[in-house]
Length: 319
Image 1 (tube, rainbow, N blue to C red):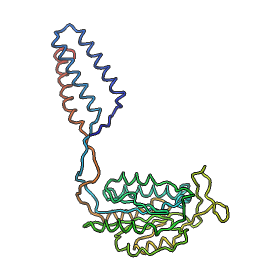
Image 2 (cartoon, one colour):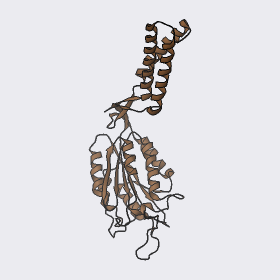
Image 3 (cartoon, rainbow, N blue to C red):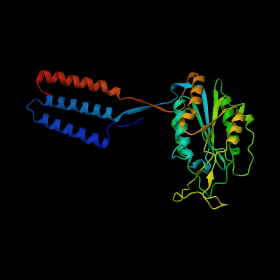
Image 4 (cartoon, rainbow, N blue to C red):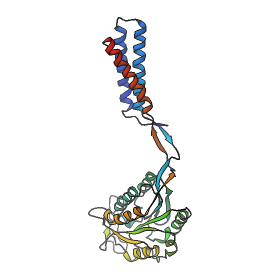
């Protein structure tokens, strides 16, 4: 059980106390029987308590609630090497800003699906296994930060292979579910390695796309140190990262997916619509916690008490 006050407690408590004190003083000063005074004070106390409880907005936790879900497992595989912070997405954004914007759109449009997230730079890491809790996945995206220039060891898309295989096999083990993959990178390989084949994983994927970020002209990158530009160690000039569409198309071909060059969120809209249209809805237990308002329990008694006060006012000409 949790509370989410509508009006902050630091405001509502003094306000209700002032109302109670003023009403009590007014009642005590009346020239009526003591029993009437006690009855009047009890009524206002009850109404104030009910008003306080309504404002407190007490909410019950609900576990394993039945919700309408899509039969989709959507996996994001995101390149988080320093080149993904190159400043050539859209007008004035870096690639990772574009990734966050575009993936939030996909998550919102495919709401009701299970989502998973793998990030990779020098190593691969599963930030979120498949979950129905969309906010958890969005929070996982928010933890992605630009790597330290001294930590960076070059780019390779091979490091995510085993984590991808693990989650894709997990998805394929479920009955009547579609496995969707969005492989997100600029395609650059700068650690001297050769791009391995992803064909084996293609058998585990039903739909999705390889989303390519960057431009042929490339973009420069800033480090966390006062926003200084990353330098090319060989020339001493500003390093420039360029998209490698050959690698991107190769991965797309292996996974039997479309390759989409991303310059705005609109580029991926047709794919998301296609996936949405090909999905079906099922009633499933949610693995996330939901909250249910209970304020209505206190609203009805408060209305009754206010009705009583109205009757007494009409009969006596006063509260």
